Amino acid sequence: MASLWEYANPVKFMRLSNWLMPVSAVLAAALIAVGLYWGFFLTPDDYRQGATIKIIFLHVPAALMAINAWAMMLVTSLIWLIRRHHVSALAAKAAGPIGATMTLIALITGAIWGQPMWGTWWAWDPRLTSFLILFLFYVGYIALWSAIEDPDTAADLTAVLCLVGSVFAVLSRYAALFWNQGLHQGASLSVAPGTRMDWSYKGPLYLCMIGFVLLFVALVLAGTRTEIRARRSRALMTRERARA
Amino acid sequence: MPDLGTYATEVLLAYAVSLGLLALLITWTWARSRRVRRDLAALEARVTRV
Amino acid sequence: MIALLIRDLRLAFRAGGGFGLGLGFFLILAVLVPLGVGPDPVTLGIIAPGILWVGALLACLLSLDRLFALDHEDGSLDLLATSPIPLEGVVAVKALAHWGTTGLPLALAAPVLGILLNLPGAAYATLMLSLILGTPALSMIGAFGAALTVGLKRGGLLLSLLVLPMYMPTLVFGAQAVTRAAQGLDPTTPLVLLAGITAGSTALLPFAAAFALRINLR
Image (cartoon, rainbow over all chains, first blue to last red):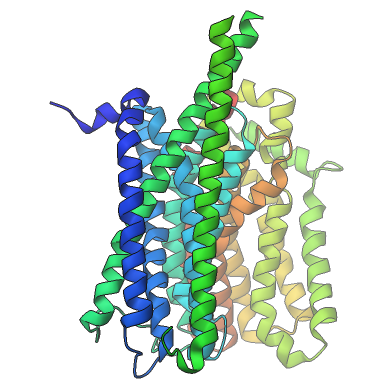
């Protein structure tokens, strides 16, 4: 029986991703295009937030992927540490910049939404603060990958950083909640999804969320393919140098 | 173009920035993929020729 | 292990060992902030807990990159790794020595700087207690960051980038404890949480740091 572990083999992974990557990319493009078109042109304005409700169709999917990308990095780092599959480590590496971009989009759209709604670009709300910290973790992770020359050492060290960083990212989330109690009274400002949402909002939102997931899949597959090729180039170069 | 009311600037700015960042990410992924693929092809051609 | 602790402490106290560096930095920060913010005692009193904790954080960071780097350069880290002491123990002892030469002096000196920053009188005991409880976690997290970056030539900046986000929970609970005490509230909850972070990182991070060191020595 074909198990998931077979795709840890770079050749099999390349064969699988060769068709899976374009398929998910096309699906992602279609879903995001339809979702954003629906959300931007057809959805009525919210009675309280006006047209700014339209930002939610970018903000929420980006925030979703910002967290899930880190979760995916955590899982692939664990697989690398335990089973030493190179594809897993390279997938974690590929996910880093994507997760960082998603976090940045979530932060920026949040700030733009907050300006007319809260009257300020930035509020030290626990949720915003945790996201900023998450972004810093992403930056540190990417920086560590690029700072270490030897690929296996880099994979090991970033995997450890990802594990320890996850613990501290969760801790930061609770610390931010704790810290804000002294300053603000409750979070009366957040638009919790599902509180009072009509299908004209839910429809495009779900489409965009699925679209962003697929976009993430496509980008991670593409990035991992690139990393596998880069690794092969490196191996060929060392072999060539050894022969010379 | 729908009527965005008083918040037109904010909504358009948010869409522009987000889509711009996504485009940047996709372009970067694509460009790096092409560069690495080309390097590998050149290297493989050289190694097999020897 | 005790011999290692004494050796590390002696190295730190020796000229150029960086013992006075952290304290001096802490003092300069406490002088610079009023110059920047203005001499209004009410404002200073409000921001004093945060400034003192941020100062302690940065002062701890200052000497971190030497934690393993010097031993890595002269090869004594390889000796320690092959010695009968477990590497986890080496990490813990080195973090303890780092704490003894930065965190503890900072905690002892903090009340003096509290006077400079017009910290309310009710908060001094909590300030010292919170620093004593919290700075071991800073040294331990720092040791992990130093272990990650030990093989790099210019690891200092990267080290702060990696370590500072992880300092955030400690900073929040520490500064909250002092702020609450300054406002006449009960600081027990943040102090307990602070102690929890220290206990947790002392228990777990030596293993992560030793793992990272082994990879770097490979």
